[in-house]
Amino acid sequence: MPERRWVVNASPLILLGKIGRLDLLRTLTSALLIPQGVKQEVERGDPDDPARRWIVSVPEDWLIDCSAIDLIVAAWNLGRGETEVLSYVNANPGFTAVIDALQARECALSLGLPLQGTLGVLLLAKR
Image (cartoon, rainbow, N blue to C red; front, side, top):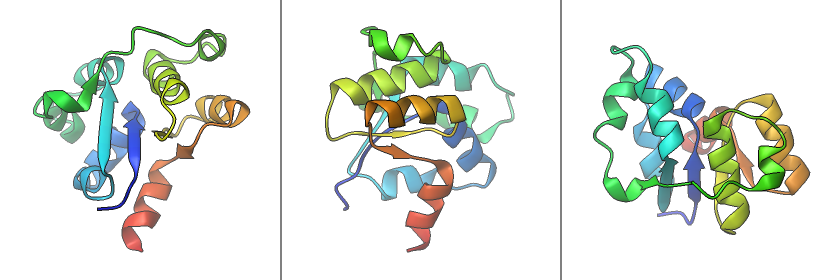
C-alpha cells in the first residue's frame, strides 16, 4: 500500500460518493482520517447522499477530534471542516489535506502544507 496519509474534508467525500468511488480513499492511502467536524457536516446532508450513508459506518479509528485549532488557520475564517483538516495537517507532519475549496487551498499553500484535491485523487487512481 502506498505511504499516503490523508485528512479528508467534506467536499471530496461528497463528490467521490456521487460517483460511487469512496473506496479510493482507502485503497490509495496507508492512513485515512476524518475530523469530527467533517463527519458532522456530511451527516447534515441529504439523507440519500452516498457520503452521508457511508460516513456513519466508518471505523472509529478514522475519526479524529480536532478541538485544538491552529490560530493561523482560524484567522482564515474557513468552514469548520476545512479549519479542522488544515489544523490537523499543520500539527502532524506527514499528513496531506484533501480539500477542494479555493480559500482553504490558498490557506494550505500559504502554510506550506501538503495538499490534494478530488481531481488529484481520481488521477492517482487512474495511474
